[in-house]
Image (cartoon, helix red, strand yellow):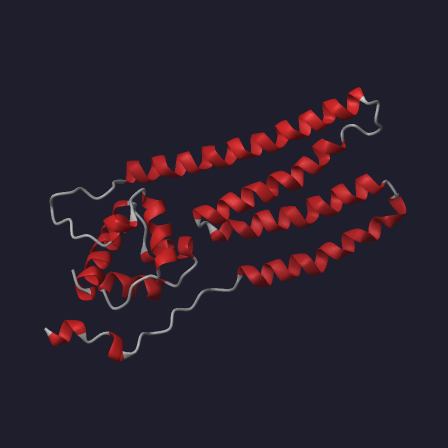
Length: 211
């Protein structure tokens, strides 16, 4: 199987899976944090995603990278919308289970502090909030839903500042919330950054014409 055949297989398989999931090229591009022009080039066989993006696409649709580069013809069905929906549900459940683990640890710390007669034994639960946001951010990045990262990063900024303020218990230090403003602005700017795919040189696409 030469590079031209692999490129064509990837184009056909990505297009089939995207259509089966009911996604437009723009919606699919947004999930991958790429441009719709890049998706269009992939589906026309003019270029191919790098291996990291292929892995994300395969994970998104519940297949393997090997499945993406193989010609299935009509012998193997394309994953349908129900399979994609089930995969999304599993990812959500995994993320929520991990978050439950954060609160379980916070509960253990609370019980230990309570048994030791410590003050403000509720503080572990306060810090569990930003810890949960960090946990969800990590899993969201793994699943490739970059658009929602903006929300989690914003929550992390303000919940950490809030938890710090309450932990210090010095109400005259209210101005530490001012640190959140530039961080929030930076997060907004960062969320607008898009990955741009440069067109491949003509010398990289001679195979189809050569035949």
